[in-house]
Structures are given as structure tokens and as C-alpha cells.
Image 1 (cartoon, one colour):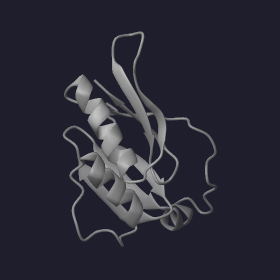
Image 2 (tube, helix red, strand yellow):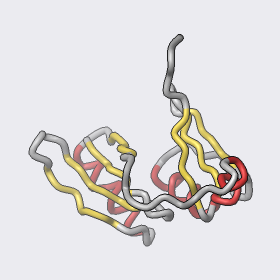
Image 3 (cartoon, helix red, strand yellow):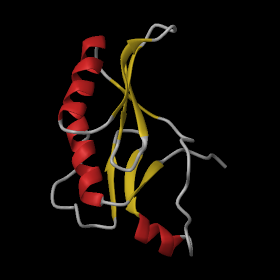
Length: 125
């Protein structure tokens, strides 16, 4: 039996706002799904999904909202200057920058932004 990572899910309080953020980030999120309780996109090898908190409470029979940053979503940019450009685009649209772009000791260019639900997303090249 083989186990394969297929879906990474994001719990969201506001589907429309979360999808707006991820579209701006550059993900191929379809239009016309902002009111759905579950949305997913195929990112070539796995799917990224969004579920409303209300739906998760039904699925898990009483889901408690998690606390803390326990899982990293890291988005690779095509070049070091693209990290800066994506960070500037996201913060320029009012989304919170958690840490401005910097050169990490392991050689990557990194920046960290926060999505509407408080998830920290790494941008790197």
C-alpha cells in the first residue's frame, strides 16, 4: 500500500477573502466559487483546498479552531527579485507582511506574508 500526499487544506473564516488573496498571490483559483464551502485547485502533483470553518465543524463533528503556526506553506518564486515583487504586491493590497524579504543564511531569498486567516506563507527563491 502506498500513501501519497494529495491535498493540503486551508480552513477559512471568509472564503471570498481567502480566495482573493490566493488569486493575487498567483494561484489559478477559478472565479465564481467564492460562496462555496469547499474549493480546490490542482497545482500539478497535489491539490490545494479551502474549506469554510462551518463546513469543517460539520465534517469533524465539532471542530475546534487551531492555535499556533504548525505547518508551513512555501511558495517558490522564479527569481530572487520576484520574492520582493510578490511581497510588495501582497502588502501593497493591504495584506500583512510578517517579515520583509531577506537573504537567508542557506542562500535563499525569503519573505513571509500572512493570509486573511493568519496563516504565514513563505515566499522564496
